[in-house]
Amino acid sequence: MAAVDAFTVLAEPTRRRILDRLRHGESSVNELVDTLGVSQPAVSKHLRVLREAGFVSCRTAAQQRIYRIELRPLQAVDRWLDPYRRLWTRHLDALERHLDSQEQ
Image 1 (cartoon, one colour):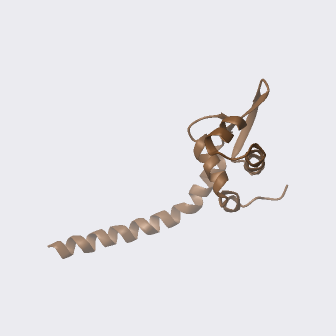
Image 2 (cartoon, rainbow, N blue to C red):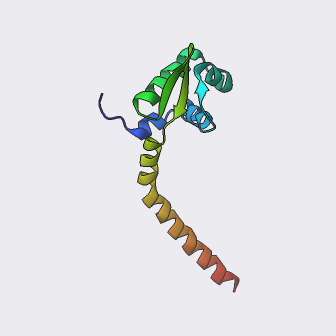
Image 3 (cartoon, helix red, strand yellow):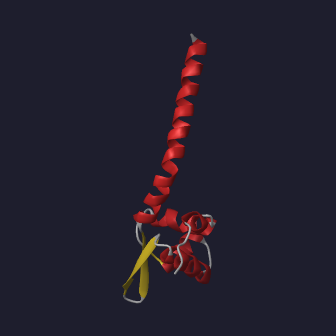
């Protein structure tokens, strides 16, 4: 399979909602359907995309597939965002210093 752009995967709102739900713990497809109010075929489609991109993994328990979040792809996104976070922090610190100097 070709490399998948993490931001393309995360651009879809339903996939982000699935990841938000899985942040709190493992979940079956049916639990995700109930929680998200999305059809089972749609949830399964989004889970397939997330699984192929490495954002989730699944295990089988009886007749169900249980999904959980995988951190590695999210850590890669976090590393990519880090320089931008530092940039904003510097700007906000400068703004705070400026505002403090205006008060004095």
